[in-house]
Length: 224
Ligand code: BJW
Image 1 (cartoon, rainbow, N blue to C red):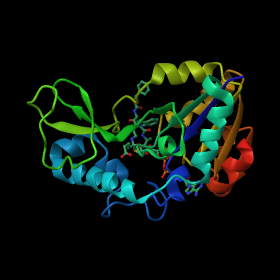
Image 2: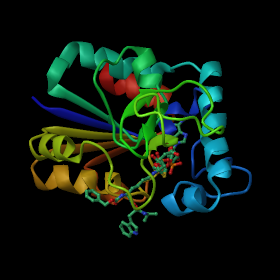
Image 3: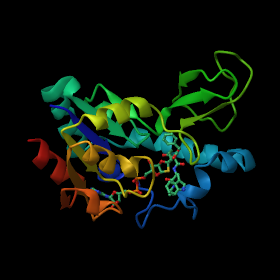
Image 4: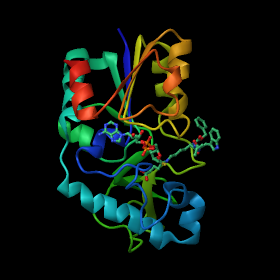
């Protein structure tokens, strides 16, 4: 058996982390497409760093919810037969107990050196443009995947989607590729596909089965 679960911002919504494209999804009036780009960072680095610094400090005040906990139980039951892929940069899956999480859009608690490309765990603010602890010179940037950049661990994800029996998508609008295309990739290769989301996503028609409601209720009901 081989299962791939993809999660998006909706799984963390009940923990109090805002989503990107729901009513409260704007940050200071900006769409994520205007802040999460290399061009926005070149043009106004402090604005972009503040976006991530605020989200990093907000992590301290949130807790995993019933959906994160259910996926950690699923990993306990399935072991390596489960690949949990998240588009989220928060650490709520890990704090719920998941041990192997593929963060395809990066992580809030990691920073990337623009010169040596080294990674460091980062829990403080990046706004002061701190130097890299590894090479000491260039500035650190958020270790996240912006529009136009290539998501992380795509080879592993595509390989596992290609041999999955089951693909489940939780709390994602299906507005952003390549994640939005995973359902078609898995389905073409024979997987049964299930969507668990508050409302039908943009790619809802590609799933064999769709259940709509709160992730905190739908995910435990599916796992248990
Ligand atoms: C609940 C709930 C509850 C609420 N319970 N549900 C034209 C066609 C195709 C592609 C492109 C195109 N033009 C450009 C592209 C490519 C582009 C793209 O997709 N653009 C679109 C705008 C069209 N993509 C890229 O550039 C990507 N890179 C790429 O394609 O490289 C090429 C390549 C790929 C693969 C191999 C080789 C080469 C990179 C995309 C990077 C996205 N980055 C961001 C920011 C990350 C850092 C950060 O967090 O700041 O990722 S943008 C933002 O959107 C973030 C998210 O991970 C991502 C997805 O959002 P998500 O998770 O779906 O959240 P929402 O808010 O949209 O939806 C939440 C859902 O939950 C809603 O449906 C709610 O109803 C639901 N919900 N409460 C259950 N309680």
